[in-house]
Image (cartoon, chains in turn purple, brown):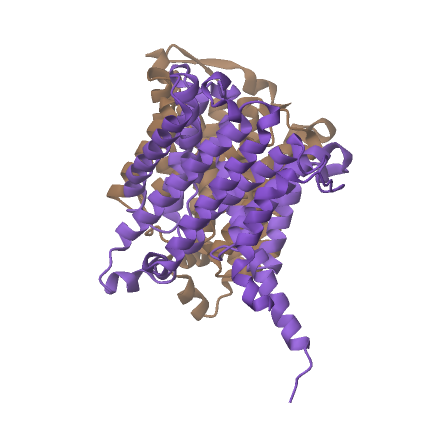
Length: 339
Length: 288
């Protein structure tokens, strides 16, 4: 019975997530207000965005085996792109979002074509360096476009009425859920397609893929551009959910936290990175709010998350996704043998 | 003319900092294959230990204490965290990433996120005239320390038994193990040396910027990474050359170009070097 229902579990989860804003249930301890209060919905929306971002990053890291240290650049390209077009040039949101994502994809193709000429640690370093340039540029506020260290709040008059105001937080939540669904569809379609298997082949043995007559460079570039475009889409969604952009989104800490999310959840698995992203974003926000009440270093979210991450690398190598498999193995071995 | 002299000496001072951080990183990567994101933490440990000890014991003893604390941190990290993950490079990188996040947060919770005024000897705050330029003395302190470290490191690698093992390990680790030498001791040693040099860089950086903050290590670390890659992984001399190139380029372009252009030009240099010479200026091919 449960085995037959299992393929529908993601759909069921999506359905629950979609109708959640109508629930007035309050979960003390987990959330401050009722489930449909704007504060909780905002928190959940950020969690969903990071779940999508982490899964998109896992397309590079867990599947293609490309340890990019510059993913923040693509997120920032989408977020700043849409924010600048809407706030400075008064574009309508949807065309601004489309342009920002397309431009970010072109940028990813350009940078990827350079960075992918190297491999291994050198690739990580080149992507890190590119992202560093992006961060410096954003912080310098060229032409008054990015707002420098203060960031760039979204000009609300340029947005559709349904996305503005505290009462409409629920629409932002659904927007974040839609983004997450898009990422899941794209990544899982790639997983099932020959491309997905080839990417995993690249991760495990690049030379073998080359011997089979495929071009590793081109395949990696496809993965890089797809992940870049998904990240930009996530950046657009984040800019809307957060009501603007701050330079933190371009920082290498964001990339590092994406890596932490993917590993914590289980890199390369179907749902691992997504769950890791949601959990990390939730803990990050909750711990920051609880911060003052906790003693010593535990008041710092990054201390808790960093320590948790190190422990996970040692003791839970497959991440959260690996945990459930281990649990089943354990249950299976405990079951009394029949016959 | 005086501007050029000042820019050159300041650039060399910055290069000295980069070299102190990069040489340790480079040796660690060359030998153990670990890209050490926690290196910035060693730097901060050295700086904060000195800052904490200076009012109690006086500056010279505090500097020694800071370097020792950073070296101990390096050795400890290798023994406790890196060694169990032997040959699993991605996991090792991930652990150092986690450590850098947690370590900086720990420092922040202990001493706050704000910058702290760093003590420096009175003579280092003075200014001397060189070829018509007024140059702060701390630049010479940085350059002198880096040159001494470079000479000491080269002598250590060249004339001692452990230096020999480290050089051989960078060249071919499997072969060294096959000859019956325990390379793991060399790993710990390299981490301790790297930690000590990073700690020294943190202390000198504190004197140079006259303040320290928990996040300082991370921002210096990225340029140190660039220096390591340009110089060639595992090469101390390569790191020295690359550090000078990066430091000077950054200073001059930042002064004569648009603000921030110096940092960007360093990255362009990195991309150019990697595309034309993937192995760096001097060193092994950069593969994971």
